[in-house]
Structure formats: structure tokens, C-alpha cells
Length: 118
Length: 116
Image 1 (spheres, rainbow over the protein chains, first blue to last red):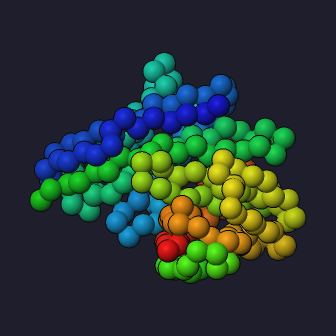
Image 2 (image 1 turned 90 degrees about the vertical axis):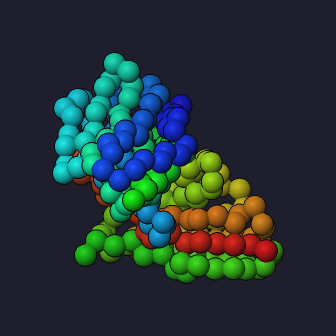
């Protein structure tokens, strides 16, 4: 069974601080995919990144960066110089490859609510 | 523009009154699914569909039905809604079911449903 743990329920930071959101996952699949989604107060889910299990390169996109470490089963997300617009709930998610048996699961963590205070 | 469209976005209904939340995608995706989001529980899968006329239960299917008569549409049906189905619902679609390369998962904007 797959599991995603986001231990931080809520985080508050002051604008311009850096913040890291933790994500730890469990899976028996050797090939799997990790995602981060942002959910602003308006409620929609905004796709941020997908990472394949065989690609451990870290990724940077503007103020966002992701640190994928297979050895610790973690896929952490860092926002540099946070801004008020970053205030949202962030979800980490995990999926396996298509099993061919009709079973497919995208497992979400419970989310981390980030509040950036001006 | 790639879109997953859900309707209604907001609904307050009474216990027992059947309702349908529609979901439509314009990307010719084969795979569609429904999730519900509850505080402290994250998103949980209700049902998914691999293709037309092929549907299966997710983690929390009780109290829900779905149908997939056309590729683009995947409505979620609450035959007899109850207050514990008050939630935020998301429809999602992707080219295929897994997270494999190219299978970006697109989510609708969400439907806030309150059952009183």
C-alpha cells in the first residue's frame, strides 16, 4: 500500500523567509511518481511538479525547488523568499505505474497549510 | 486550452435529494477519477474510470455512483446524499492511469457540496 506523510499540518512564516515543506512516502513499487500540488484559498488544485523515481536530480523553478532523496524516501519542497501569494495548502502525492489490473491509485498526503505573513 | 470542467461549483442540498455533479474534459483522456477532500484527510479517491463503460471503486465509494457513457464525461451521482458527504469534490483526468511519462493529471476547479 502507498502512503504519503506530510508531518507539518500548518506553517507560518514572515514574508521573504525561506520555507521547506516536508514529504515522506512509502511504496513497494520500484517505479513511481511524485507530485506536488498547490491549493490556494480559492480551492482549485494547481499542478507544480512531477518527478519520476528514477530521476533523482533536484529541480529548481524560480523560487521553488524540490529535493528528491530516494534513500530517505523524501520529496521536500522549498520556497525561497516567500511571498504572501504563496499562502496555500500544499499537497504531496504519489502514484505507481499502471499495473494493468485496473488498479491505479494517486495517494495524497493530508496537506500542509502555509501562511505567509506580510 | 486543456480543461476539466465541473458543475456545479457550489451546491447546498438537503438529505436524500438526489444530485449529480458533472465532469467534462476536452483532452480526449481515457482515464478519469473523482476525489473528495476533507479537512485533515487530504484527497481520497471515490471512483475511477479507465475508459468508456469501465469504472471501478476507489478508496471511499460508499454512497456514490458514477457512469462513463462518453469519453469526455464522468458524472458523480449521489443517489441519497447525507451530511457526511459534505465535502469538496474534484474530478481529474489524464491520458493514462499511472503516473507514467506524459500522464499529467488535470484537476477540475472543485465542487463545494453541502448536505443539510
